[in-house]
Length: 256
Ligand SMILES: Nc1ncnc2c1ncn2[C@@H]1O[C@H](COP(=O)(O)OP(=O)(O)OP(=O)(O)O)[C@@H](O)[C@H]1O
Image 1 (cartoon, rainbow, N blue to C red):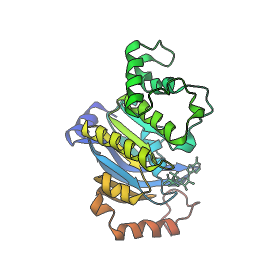
Image 2: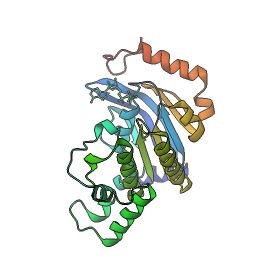
Image 3: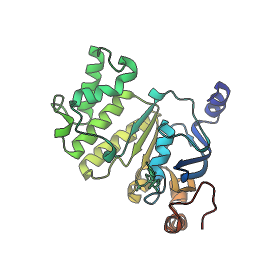
Image 4: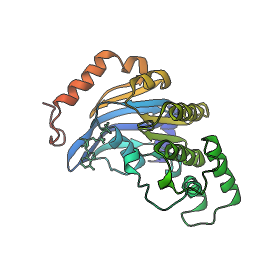
């Protein structure tokens, strides 16, 4: 993104702008012509049916997928974007302990193979304490419960101190107590002025904790205040679009 565009986006109060974004797999669109602005400092849920393109959208924002068409504009360096993928995408057999996993959140300071400074260790320790995992430092990540591991990943995000935080289904298969604790961290990040985005399936959670919502069913249905976007008519529309879409439709063919 050019310096001028970055400045213009910042002046509009935008953390990120999508311009006619289309993302495809083998030329089949998963995200189709999506445009809009994520306000800096906003707290936004991404909602939509299974297969709606929610994870694809996050992957495009972090640069794992390239747009087939359109643009994603932001003025952020990679280290300014924190990303929590869906749990199923993370390999927990990797032989690494809890403390080192949290320290990975600091890779941009220490470098991938650099010596870890004492200050970083102390911050990692503090992050583990914040997520309620004192004493877990040496445990291999493969030995943790799903909820404990999710706490570790949140500690890693705490360590990173990113300006934009993207969470893909952070509370799926997580119990009420852990969800409550992790939602408190989300609120804390929001209070610190960070921009936070979470893909969620629990509409109650969306309504009670996320002031803004982006509702998608491959195409954008709504993006703005949650009370407006999550209106019954929009939810029906999302469901109807999901029921009629053709998985094999090529790029830019009109929906059936
Ligand atoms: N690696 C891939 N190769 C081919 N198609 C893919 C790939 N990843 C996702 N898709 C397809 O892209 C579409 C959007 O998938 P995506 O995972 O973004 O949806 P989602 O909204 O996150 O769904 P869910 O709520 O089920 O997690 C789906 O039709 C899916 O099958």
